[in-house]
Image (cartoon, rainbow, N blue to C red; front, side):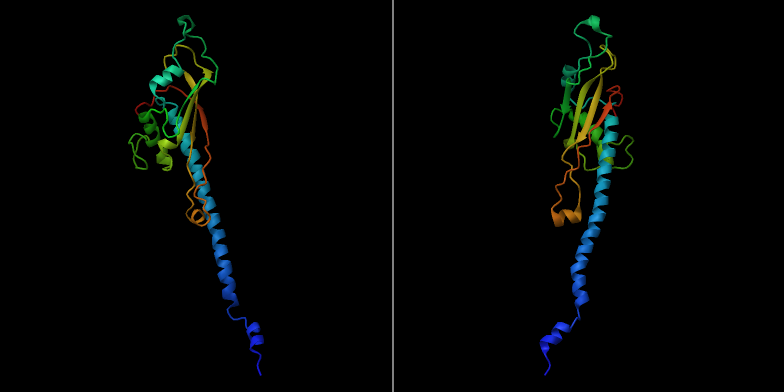
Length: 208
């Protein structure tokens, strides 16, 4: 009489297939993690480069805050006309911000820096591209810009005050097609990456 139970336990047919069904999803998940980690680093680097470019463009463009608010925060002339020509105050507490979500922003100036001279993102042939031509994820709603006194320049300077400008991004998330769907990582936010630069003439690129 044959012991069917013993023959069943000794039968190893299909074992390799069973092991493959267990290990292949794990291997594919690890492979996807490596690929998407590289993709995430690419998005991170793309964001940094776009902000660096945008800060350089904004440093020679019209202020990204309304002209009246900018003039109130950074008057061109000293209260006493005799003080014109003296060094501007080195007080970084004197500042004004624009954003997020375009709060207190000059919409036209901000759109020009973000979208470029053609007013569109990602369109080839723009002679003066904007931030979103380098990274389509960045919109005017995602930017925060802060102008501060730098101590450079002087009262009565014809081209206006020399300020320190900080540009940073908010609420941009990584695009992770596989891991986002499987592990719920779609809400991982890319760091703000503030870029600080000294402004030049805040009107040179007014039509860029």
